[in-house]
Image 1 (cartoon, rainbow, N blue to C red):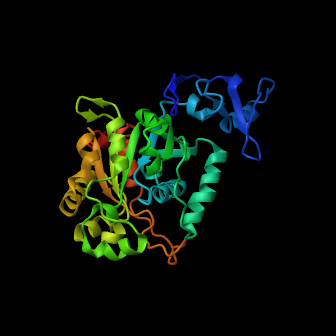
Image 2: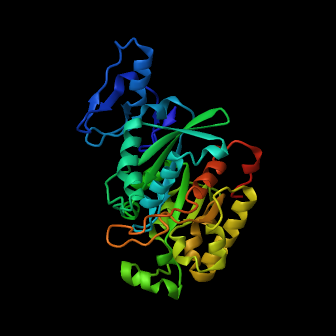
Image 3: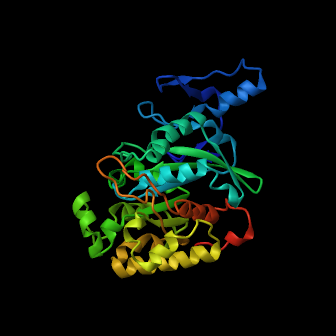
Amino acid sequence: PTLCPYCLLPVEYDETRLVTLDDKRVFRPLDLSRERRPMHRQDALRQAYQSCPHAPADAPHHLPVPFLTNGEPLTVALVGSSAAGKTHLLAAMLGEIEQGGLEPYGLKCLPLNPDTHREFIRERVQRLHRGKRLESTGQTSFAHFADGLLVTGGGVTRPVLFFDLAGEDLVQNGEVTSFLMGVGAFIFVLDPLRALRLPALEPVRARTGLHQRELGDEAFTTVLNRVPRIGPYIDAPAAVALNKSDLIRFDPSVDRWLSRAADPDEEDLLAESRDAYAFVAHHGNASWLKPFDDCARCTLHFVAATGAQVRGDVYPHGIRPRRVLTPLLSVFAMSGLLPGARWKEVGT
C-alpha cells in the first residue's frame, strides 16, 4: 500500500471514500457507483480525492486519487527559512515544467490533480511571470501539498508531490516535522543574504531587513535532526539550492554557472556541487553546509528563482529565472526518475 504523506500510515484506493471539491472549494462526497461511461469515470477520478481513513475527524486530509493509483510516489519538500525564496523557486520550477522543461530529459508530465494544478499555475506561476511578488507560505498547523505531477520516464509513471513549507512550521516540532519522516527527497533552499559574509550584500540586507547568521538555517537543522538515518547518514536524496545567486554573480565561479543553460549531466552536477560547496565554505559558516554533510547523496546548485530585485510587491523589470530545474533534476536522478545510465552516480 501507498503511505499517506501526512500521517505515514498505509492507504489503499477505496472508492467508498471519494470526495470532490465544489465551486466553493469545499469537499463533497463523490459517488461513482452508477457511472457506466468509461471516459466520464476516468475524468472524474482524475479530479477526485480520497479521504485518508486514519485522519482524525477534526483534521481530515485528502489525497488525489492518481496518487493512489499509479507507481511509487515521490514527495519533494522545499525546506528553508521564510524569505529564502522557496515559494518563488517552486513557482519558477513548475513554470519551466509547464513550458516543457523536463521533456529533453525523457520525462513527460501531467497534473496530478487538474483543479489544484490550474489554481497553482494561475495564483503562483502566472502571477510571478507578471512580475508580482508572491506571498510566503505562512504558518500553518499542518502541511498541505502545493501541487503535484504525474511524471513518466522510461515507461514508468510516478506521482510527484511538492510541498512548500514555511520555516516557522518546521521549528514547532509538531505534526509537520513528523510528516518530514515520510518525505522522499529534499531541496534545501539556502539564502545568501543570511549565509554569506560578503560586504557586497550589505545594502540588500539593509533594504530587506535580513541579517547574516553564523549558526546556519534553523529549518535545515530541524529537518536533519528528525529524518531517519541509515547509520550516520540520511538516506533520502537532497539538493541544496543556493537561491538568489544573481546577487552574487560578481564572483566568476557563480557567473560561470548562471551563464550556462540548465542541461546538466553527471559530470556537470559534480563540478557545480564542488564549486558551490567551496563558495559557501569560503564565504559562510560550515553549519550552512549541514545538508551536504548529513545526507548520503546530496548536490549543490547556483540558482535564481527570479533573477531580479523586488521593489515593494513588484519586480519592475520582470523576472529572469536561472537554472531552477537543476536541483529538481538532481533529486529526480537520485530517486531513479530519470531514464538512462548516466545519472546513476549523481550525489555520491
